[in-house]
Image (tube, rainbow, N blue to C red):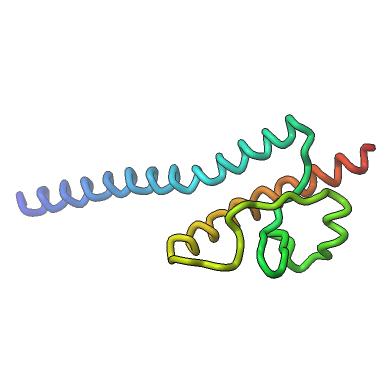
Length: 122
């Protein structure tokens, strides 16, 4: 009987640690989104509704790769995101570019409707 109690306590303790791990994972996932929202708020406060574009041999608008580049450029304007070129000198540089690209994609997906609303209001 004692073995079952000990086993149950250990199992419950493991479940409790799992909740802490999930909470930490959720917090880690929230960090990039918080940075995006801070950037969106800053841009809105400055009435800057331009979207980020990734630099490289082919200019792209993260999140809008299949859309007409020139149309979006004329609607909202674009600003280059530093460190998004397509030449990598290390795996760290590749990872950093991927993170910047994800940031720009999230930013653009939030900013684009705001841009359209701002342009239609003028």
